[in-house]
Image 1 (cartoon, helix red, strand yellow):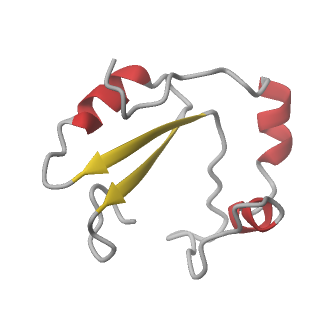
Image 2 (cartoon, rainbow, N blue to C red):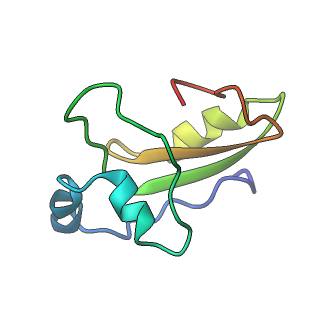
Length: 95
């Protein structure tokens, strides 16, 4: 296992995940100590994303760690990527 990928943990029950489906991510983030990311909006009205999280720290320009993170993920997991060294370009997808 790559040391920059946190081990996957099933920390939330399916019932808890279901309860969070109707809460905006920014609302949840605002209520935590870490704060929230300003300006993030869903691409589609009514879009929701909820699940257990797999986190990865990506050191540019090598993106091969993303493959390892995907292999460590299960269906329904949310992959959160910290892209170190570039605040302007997405490492994958829209964000």
